[in-house]
Image (cartoon, rainbow, N blue to C red; front, side):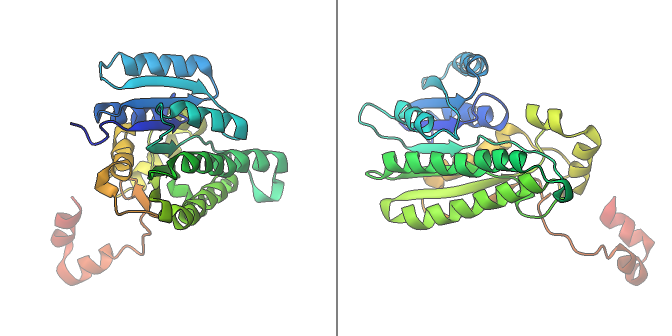
Length: 274
């Protein structure tokens, strides 16, 4: 029996990348139903076919939904429930990024991105919580290491993810009395379709070099973090932000390699670093 046996789940932005990885992990853990939602029907259909072909017992469904449109979010959440209107897990993953310099701020672009990354999260949390109020449940938002520190020329994305993380903490505070847990995953560099389309390879390589584990992550590894919050493994955890980033999000101080060499010699430093 899997960790999500019998659970009804929904994943926004579930047609590609991290969302698709989460949906697959949920099916592997015997979720009764996984609803993937997104804006493009053709992408969702292809994703649903791929998931169904894996041969798991859980039902795979999809529904087109713009998470910034409340009526569509409400309808998608309702469709994800079982026949008694119960929803167990919401993964609010839909989002995007945009570089833009403060000195040349495009207000329309900022507004659109903030609407998707914050209001889209808000609406997903709101309507999932309405369905979970009677029996509890788990809501997981997908943020980014960019939400934890400023990034030059990436203000819209960093600001939106920081706001989404505070939304998670506020929602956890308000929804805890109903047995609803609200948590957040903060991924690092995962070479998904959107990353490949928006970041040059040199920047992707830099993220990897700056991470403690010196490699990129995978959608499956992000999904493992989500699974902790979604399942009973995290049943006493709420209002938390988990960095699944290979250590790229760790705040780093000065490098004291030269001090090691001065005190203990070059051979000792070499042993520590090679």
